[in-house]
Length: 185
Image (cartoon, rainbow, N blue to C red):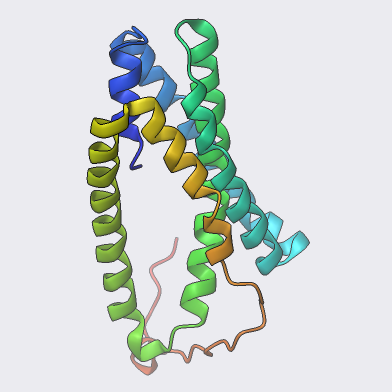
């Protein structure tokens, strides 16, 4: 997310892409997010939560560096679409698995606070990193800032949990919901 404004400046400026090409470059790969999220349950069932989380978490970090090599023309557009498709597909598979991992390890009485903090810190981090990337691009140029972001993203898999056997908190059913009728068709 933090490199999207830089890529917009690069593609719509010096590389000469039209607005519809820029829109296509980011709209078409969104299908990968749907595919990844739909595959995540099957992948976890087959390979296990921890292995899927590490693999997709590592793969999603590998794609960003490719955006530093975008060139004008159809080949450049195809590169952006391919990189974004790979990145969004991996993120689409990673996000639900990681969210489940984190929520399984959160005590029940702290779920609401955890989700609120997670949402706030995620949005604040994106805003902060976008601003930092903009400053960096002002000093080095958008292509170099994207390359630096890509190289730094390669270190993020080191932040993923290395062991899948940390304690899990058992969820107890809410007694107020035990006798509630369901309106399912």
